[in-house]
Image 1 (cartoon, rainbow, N blue to C red):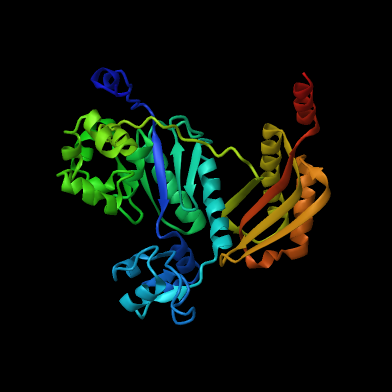
Image 2: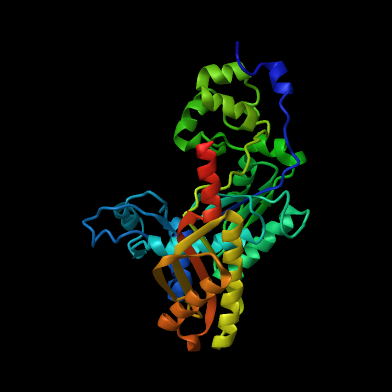
Length: 375
């Protein structure tokens, strides 16, 4: 007997009360390089080693939309990309730098909600059913996130809004770059009926050939198939598609649980040009870091200071201590010391951040864990 017959299907509740946002950065790596070097604007930019300098090996990590107009795409060989557009500008990837920018974007998400599920370096789900702004409109929240990423980071993103993860992710792809697409519950089924089969999660362009051979070209064709036929023909994928084409996806937004560090940073709308203002700003950041450590019952002995200047140049300084940090005043004193080692206020500071790593449970929590083990 199949797990989901007709009666079982009708017993499954489709939760349409949630408010889910999917944020997808636009041509993330390429956009960062163009932001940092405005002379690249309006030129085809490919993130990947130049084929004439790397024995024609390597693949494209990503490219901007101008390069895409030549047929270049991610995972293509750099040799083929060069053949499609010899005038393209190839830039060696700077992954550690891109990860830093990704962390800054994550800080903007944290202003909105704690329910964040990173999917990759450049995209994430946010459950904003409850949010720090007490705003009932997920659309307004998505617009606010887009504005803050552009103002604070200098990059654009596309957003999808719906009541589940499947629909929100599809929505974010509908109007790139810098787009916003909303799929409310009442519009989900009409939208899904028109959706090409290759756009359903799990299908893909290659495997879609099998569906098309069976005359399943879109959601309208797919929904005609029974659960039993889909499961017999496609296995687990058939099971998933039976529910997705009906707009059902009750997967929660899963927060990342494994924590390697605790950090906070702040981007300033007005550049900071004096040390007293900077140190006041740093104290606010370290207060938040300390509060996070207290909430998580953690302490750490590696501190990292990040300073970003007006021209987006970023300096970081890290120090490993022989004692643990958790109190705000101690974290602030170390951050101030690190700034005096590397900083220069005259250049105009747009961002300051402090991170504590090499984490450990504080003594009280360790005692509780030990007591539990003994018992």
